[in-house]
Image (cartoon, rainbow, N blue to C red; front, side, top):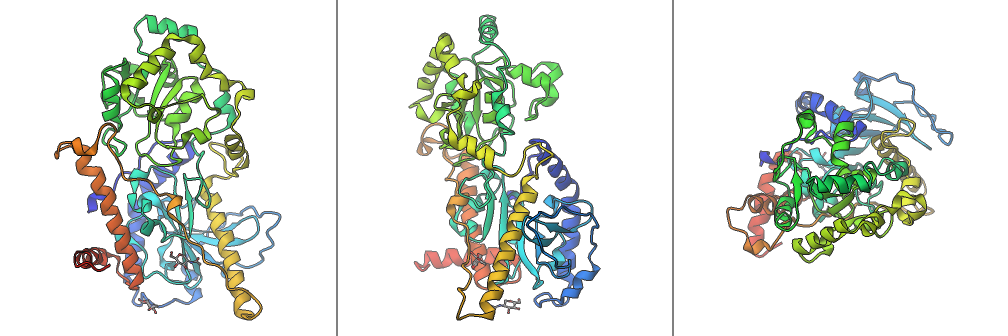
Amino acid sequence: MAGRRRLLPCVGLGLLAVLCWVWVSFASLSGDQLHLDVLDAPDRGAFQPQSALSDMEFASVASYRGPGNSDRRSKRELPILLWWSGGLFPHFPGDTERVDCATSSCLVTSNRKVQLYKRTASIIFYGTDFRAYEAPLPRLRHQTWALFHEESPMNNYILSHGPGIRLFNYTATFRRESDYPLTLQWLPSLEYLLEPVAVSLEEKNRLRREGLAPVLYMQSHCDVPSDRDRYVHELMKYIEVDSYGKCLNNRPLPEHLEDTATATGEEPGFMNFVARYKFHLALENGVCPDYMTEKLWRPLHQGCVPVYRGSPVVADWMPNDHSVVIIDSFPSPKALADFLKRLDENDDEYVRYLEFKDPRRITNTRLLEGLDSREWGVNDMSKPNYLNGFECYVCEQENARLAAERAYRKAPQKTQPPQGKMASNSHMGCPLPSPGYGDIKDLPADDGWLQIWPQDYWQSLDQAEGLESLIRHNESDPSLLWKHIQNIAVSRARGKH
Ligand SMILES: *[C@@H]1O[C@H](CO)[C@@H](O)[C@H](O)[C@H]1NC(C)=O
Ligand SMILES: *[C@@H]1O[C@H](CO)[C@@H](O)[C@H](O)[C@H]1NC(C)=O
């Protein structure tokens, strides 16, 4: 099962690229070292005295305190939030820092020593790194778990199953239903969408006459759960597609662009190259509601028409009702190809898809409000990033919960006990991967996709249930996961549940 660990894809807009670099550079080192610390502690199960924190290194970076924050407690009194995925810890230098959020403060740390401390109120996990067999156990009743997962569902299907996601109390995911939604994380701003069309239709038509295909495909990550190549392969039978990436490659990339073949960045040479195409095939690597990436927003930015598959509810976020061609609204690849050919030959029909470049034609209020109301920025140093934003969300929730618990302890007759909070399947809940084209029953047994993704999905459910069982049995050793999975399977086979 160790094969489930995947490389964190180190691509993305500025912030994540930096964090990713940090993760790759430090994760293994600090992770192992801290892990040993915890295992070596003689008395792992017991709560440790608060003063044990005194040997932690406190960074002395002054932090901004919101005008509504009158939290006067010292660092030694604040609730602690532990970043279990230390590589993503959004503070430098040091591994511990005080954060002063809008109305209250917390101490945040990536030092796993504090795992079992009474003062540790919440543990924050990065979805891509979350492993059931490495979970912090025993799970203490007074501690909440918080999940940050902005990346593809394919990185960790444990989170797509009810028993997995319900382990968390707070979530920040790409889904609008999560507590701190990151749905528009790949869209930097409204201005990004309104950027004038990079290559005029006259020029695109001229390039077409010179032999450029109407459709671009550029993908180098081929074995993915959405099985996009199977669809594109079929589509290519009916319409010309220039494919420059490693997947279904039929054209060499010009030499000066070779290094950026897999780049999602905005390198100008690369951008100009792809902007010449009328249509961009934009198929996400995983299918899930609200999972939308730069594959979708970049063609809109450039004034090319995305031909999209990914979030089944993508239309909810589009500038208007005619700015994207949605693959799944066509009965077959041939029907889609026929439609694209018609648009290719009809300038009036084609430019209708670019009308949103005029701000008056952006009619989707959900999109406008979503951009307007988010507190974090994308590549915008004047706004907080969403890691710090989510951290503060958890901090405020925990301070409110602790205050409510104190009030209840003081006057149980006069106050309500605080309500618990738990994530549900709608906070992630991605469906079982299905073939990009055709019926799963028709795939040969040795099909590569078939051998990987449906299995991965169901094994992830086993792991989620195994972890849930570890927690229910108050186990301290997460490596007992496999034993618990086996027990569940055995009792299932016997007809018990
Ligand atoms: C769970 O286990 C820990 C130590 O492993 C122990 O301190 C704690 O009391 C246990 N909790 C319950 C509810 O049994
Ligand atoms: C957090 O979630 C767990 C597991 O789902 C649940 O048992 C617990 O009551 C929740 N805690 C709070 C404070 O909501």
